Amino acid sequence: MRQIVLDTETTGLEPARGHRIIEIGCVELHNRRMTTRTFHHYLNPGREIDDGAFEVHGISNEFLSSKPGFSDIAQELIDFIRDSEVIIHNAPFDVGFINAELELLGPGWGRLEDYCRIVDTLVMAREKHPGLRNSLDALCQRYKVDNSSRELHGALLDARILLDVYLAMTGGQTDLSLDDQQGSGSGVVQQLRVPDTDRPRLLVIEPTPAENALHQQRLDAIDRKSGGKCVWKTIRD
Image (cartoon, rainbow, N blue to C red; front, side, top):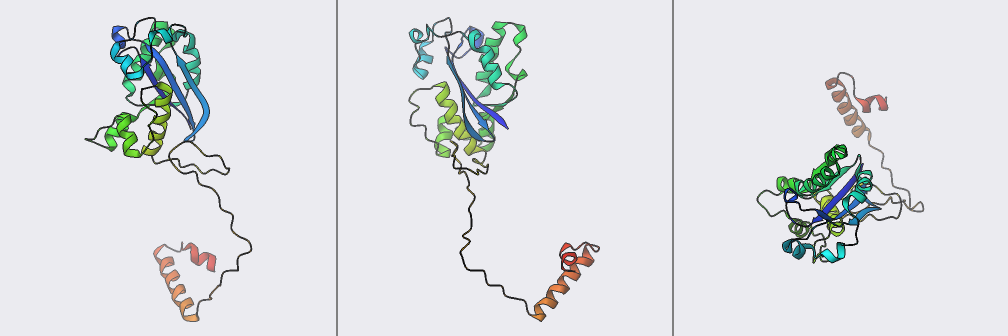
């Protein structure tokens, strides 16, 4: 299964008031293991960044002045997320901004939901931990995910942190690895163990005639109850 963890940073809080995306970051998961593929761009929004937003992410107008616009990376984004399950924390916020950007490009672009399935980890967390704080920072603390590098918000950094939170919240990294490669999730990658061929043979203790008789009685009882479908009796016979 291919999954994409996605996050954005914006000029403000409301796309309906003309606010735009200034950073988008995506990390790819395949069968619950992070791959080496990422998608990351800073974007020139064509407008000023609100002071409150700047305090959150620290991305300046000057820094973005030479960056591409959303229209320049839209197709690349769609190609990256197409036919995947996209994991977002507080999905209506990010999806609303991406859909507003796609709308500016024209009706032919559709909506994000037309290209992928969306999973909201905030909804998952509220169902799993009702009545508790379920911000990304709160979930990091609850699941012991290291977010010490998160002094300011950043789309790619937050996507990587959310990836670890998502894996922890949904049961860890459960795939069986047959090589030495370690995933970046919070679970443990299991390794196959090869038994020692030089170890002594195990001692086999044969049952006594009385034990054999009791065992046969038990199989006969199971056979009667199952209408003659006792597998162990068939094998024994």
